[in-house]
Image 1 (spheres, rainbow, N blue to C red):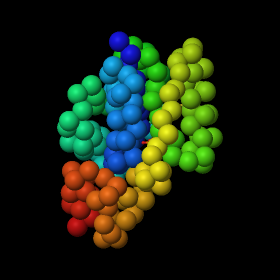
Image 2 (tube, helix red, strand yellow):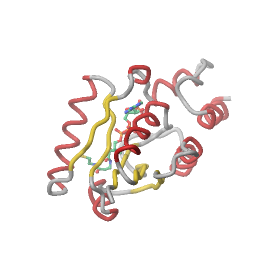
Image 3 (cartoon, rainbow, N blue to C red):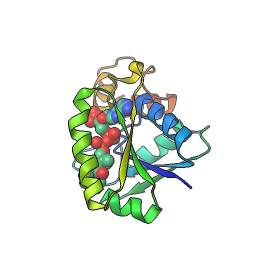
Image 4 (cartoon, rainbow, N blue to C red):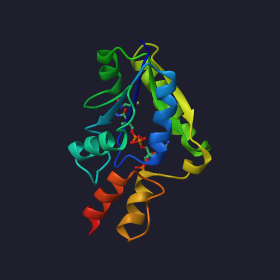
Length: 158
Ligand code: COA
C-alpha cells in the first residue's frame, strides 16, 4: 500500500492545498493529511479547528484521512509507514524552501523521498496568509477556500 503524507500548517486549508491533495490521491493508495501541532507559525485557528476545517473541506475524498502530529515529521512518517512525503509547488519561489526541507527530511529519515505536485495555474498565487488578510478586510474569498473555511473566517473576523 502506497501511503503519502501531506503535512502542513493548514491555517486554514485552501483550494490550492485541496487541488494538490486531489492529485496526490490519484497517485497514492492513501493520503494522510498531517496537520502540524507545533511549528514556528502563530496560527489563527487552533489545531482542532484546522483539523475540522480540513475534514469538512474533503468530504467526498475516500482514500484521504486527516490527522495531527507533533514533533519531527519524519518520525511521524516512519510510524505511519509512509512511502513518501507530499508537497505542492506553486512557483519557483517555493522551490528553495521546499528543496531544503525535502533534503533535510531525506537525510533525517535515511532516504524518505518527497513527491512534488505542481499547483494548477489558478491556484498558483493562493496562500493561507493572503486569504486571511483579505478576509480580515472584508474581501471576497469564496474562489480560494471551501464554504466551510469561508464561514469560519467570517466568524473569526466578524
Ligand atoms: N496551494 C496554496 N497554498 C499553498 C500551497 C498550495 N499548493 N502550497 C503551499 N501553500 C502555502 C500555504 O498556504 C502556506 O501559506 P502561508 O505561509 O501564507 O500560511 C505556505 O504555503 C506553506 O504552508 P503549508 O503548506 O501549510 O506548509 P508549512 O510550510 O507551513 O508546513 C511543515 C511545514 C509543517 C511541513 C514543516 O514545518 C514540518 O515538517 N514541521 C514539523 C517539524 C519538522 O519535522 N521540522 C523539520 C522539517 S525539515
